[in-house]
Amino acid sequence: IATNRQLVDWTRDGRYILIKERRADGWLLNAVPVQQGRPQGERLALRSLPGSRVLSTINGSLLVATGDEPEAVRNTWLGTLNDATDSTTWTSLNLVGSPMPNTLTPWSPDGTRFAYVTGDLSQTTRVIRVKNIATGDDRELYRTDRLAGCVAAHHEEVLFCTRVPVTGEQLEIFSVSLESGRAETRGTLRRGLVIEHVTTDDRKVVFFDNMTSGRLEWEIATGEQRGVPFYRAEDGRWSLSGWDSIQIRPATDSTDWRLLGTISSRRWVQGS
Image 1 (cartoon, one colour):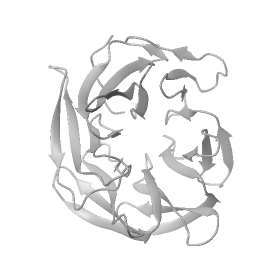
Image 2 (spheres, rainbow, N blue to C red):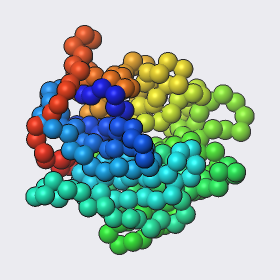
Image 3 (cartoon, rainbow, N blue to C red):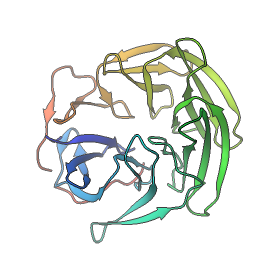
Image 4 (cartoon, rainbow, N blue to C red):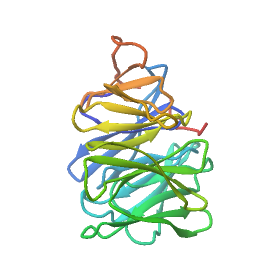
């Protein structure tokens, strides 16, 4: 996909990869159009930002949290692409308290709602909140201790989250209804795993494995675990490898890594 860049996110329909490039004043964010693992046009420069947390929403907008990690996030922005001018309009979002780093979780198909987590870094209590961009409503959903992270399902209005118990070496997995706030314990995994995303069929939760730098797939229904060596798109079709040099290949292929260069279409993602 690129050299001397870092992976940020893979858009929900799998057609764009977001990458960032280190600059003197922070990061330059780019959208890279990709189809069937091949370049599709030039990168679209989106914006420079001091923070590094960016997520694509289902309808193709961007959520950007700016701030110097691991300190608390200072500002959160919504980016909307104007196809006619190849420009992005950025709107500042007013949240109740500063979200914790790496906790923005978009899920609604129209891109108007997302979840985030607030809390005092000196304490263990964390609060999951839901923000409605269209109406401005911002409500508390769930409160717990030692929350580690959350990701959203694709077809159900539910978050899958992890938390660290006071004692023991297990990581607890639980779900939270985005409507009622009702929580349900789903299982446990070993420590050292960072929750990343839910696959598009809502069958698996994918974790980054700090011990191997690979991934672990956890079956929601059965609790079965399987290690995979590389990052995969949420639809499971493509794998990504690398940090400064990002390569792509079909998930079922063990050899065909493609290091891609410059790329052609100026159109950004439309949600599926």
